[in-house]
Image (cartoon, rainbow, N blue to C red; front, side):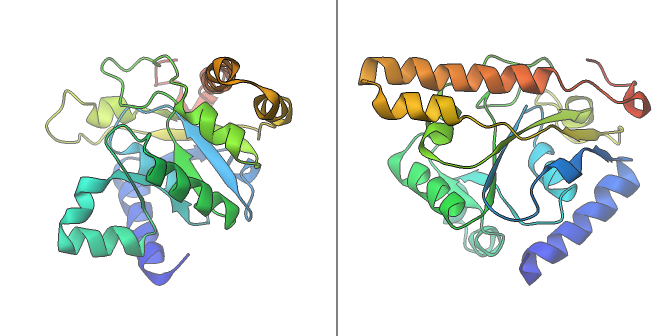
Length: 218
């Protein structure tokens, strides 16, 4: 972690652990060093900083490229090594930036659903993350957040102080799917990407709340 990220991480510790009573489970399953993709469900703006707070390493988040148009925010986001992407997150420049971070040994957070849930339930996976997984060569850790929809869902104008939790799963190896993608034609590639994305969502769904966080819906 650089100094700017460390200061933000420490502030997030105070906010999430102190105000939102955050709990973190399975963080030891996330590699401490080397490239890794974190694939999580998406329920709130709170999700990225919450997931990063549970890990003692810098996590690269994604942010819309328009946010970098504001000078002060641009300086802050770049100091945290946030990756700018277009609105759909599917642009060539965004993909290259993500893969560059992974090749440099970074950890990057992606959301297979693509956007925040509207009702608190898990959404269908989109194939975009499958493309990134297929073109990378690193473990993929499924992550599930609990309580952030109740704390600050997309229907709420401001956050509420509700308990939140994060559960990190065991790393997944997509070696077979990556090998299939290298040999596939364009028609088959899309199906492989979707298969990877759906596998990830199934693993995320399988991460059930621990006994200490039974207050959260499954």
